[in-house]
Structure formats: C-alpha cells, structure tokens
Length: 51
Image (cartoon, rainbow, N blue to C red; front, side):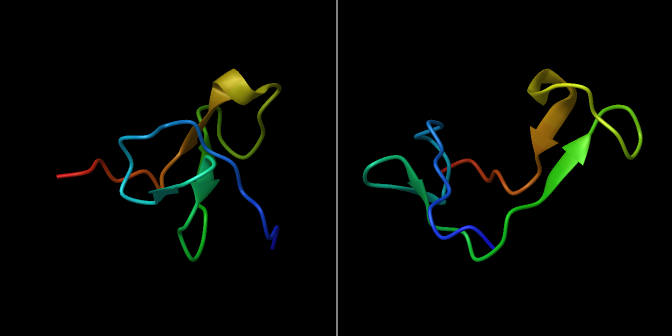
C-alpha cells in the first residue's frame, strides 16, 4: 500500500498535518460498477466527518 496518501478534505477524522491521510486502509468505490473512467466517477468510502 502507498505510504503517503494525500487528502485535502480537512474535516475528515483521518486528515493529518501536511494533507496526509492517517487511516490504516483506504476504500475507494466506483459509481459505475467495477470500472471508472476518471476520478469524478469514484468516491472515498474511508471518509468519516469530524465530530
């Protein structure tokens, strides 16, 4: 797995200093089944809003 996962969504529980994702694993899904043509067709299901 990639060592440095960058994220700009600073209201996520896993957001860390320097835009680093601190989650143990990242789960990304496609809007169109098992394939995506571009990043707009995907979502990060790891996102958890800060409380």
